[in-house]
Image (cartoon, rainbow over all chains, first blue to last red; front, side, top):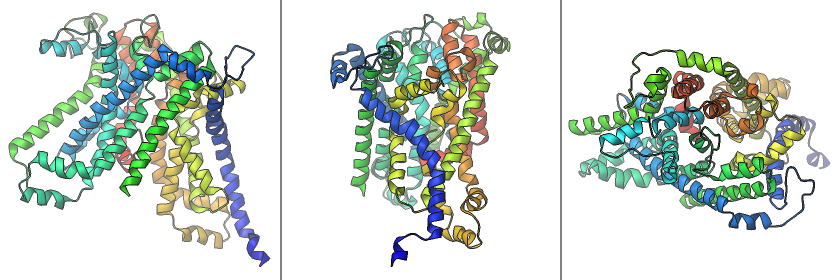
Length: 299
Length: 277
């Protein structure tokens, strides 16, 4: 009986292999993920200034101060508007294009490539391209709206328009990704549903409304939540769009990560910045919980 | 068989798709067009779409005024190092988590997946402090540091091992007296070539596109990546659209070439896995 309890030699040698190969991976995860995440949590309760010697525990004071911090409130509001704005533009857009591409076309590959191109493009050059397009003096965007009789706009200078610009370019960038995910779902819908609908004389709009949409609802939710989560990290676009010759970015559109980096690396208030990071984490966790909850409901 | 849509509907759909595709590609076209224009033509209103006298002067200017070649090399070093590290860690951990039962396996897998939910920006500050303590700020290893593991990579390899490598194959190796590491290298790895090459493409693109961390860690000009260099270049030299567009074209080109060459593979990879490009 004792032999059953003590693992045999072969089993032990397999364990040894498993532990030896996993050890470096575990060490990396500990050092680069788990410990830093815990440190953010801990630091958020301290007045942790990079250049101060004393770093006293202050409980929830950082969080309380955040609620009174106008810059933070603005950043959180802007980020939320941007995140949901990106969903509002890119999800219906992607759904529309995917619906057109769901059935095979001669030029399918070409369309897919064109819509997916922005997804793989890195953010800095993509934003720079948009920066010229939206330039108030020389950009083709103002030329385009001029053809419709709209006067030129200061896209990157007026705060509401700057936020809209960030939403527009981010939606352009993410649309292709969302489209591909929708396409997978739509191509999995059995053709007989559509055949039956056609026999009943359903119009294309009706087919979309009563067959496609209900069947891809889980994917629709997945894509929307993923898009919101990803968009809460918005930073690069704002950094590049709003930076001017004086090198003072982020004054037009202040976002969460920008505010965090400013507090942490310009004012060295790293405890305070950590509290902001925890707010970002809380938002992401709530959205993820919604995601999982909805997935469970479907089962 | 589905009936064909009436001709007017087909024409309408194709037109919409074509306009959409052109709009998506327009920013790239505008970027290339601006890069080829002379300074005088850039300041012209209304803007011309096709350059009147296309020239490569802006490209020469970029390499002349900024260490652009160095920045591209740094991006390449970052992307290649990150890709190799992610492939190694993902292959090992993914295989072991799929085929070995040992105490602590499930919690370990759960922790690896759970950290994937946490955005990088959340733990960036402590990671910065750790890098500082290790003396890695303003060094290439410091730039690479956070990008040596990818939770999705481990998950992805594990799924592939479960789906495509039967236990019997590994058992057969063991019965023949092969060591565990021999089996991994000579039996498992060849069978993972496809999934690993897909993962490699994603890891490469992900690393090439990094911005926030290199911006924080690389302080001297010679250590900038193409992304960081480009973003700071445009603030340093005021509105020189031509030069900045030329820089953008150069930094976007490597990724676009990879994408166009491996288009089917990348799009299918995203479609299958839901992986963010």
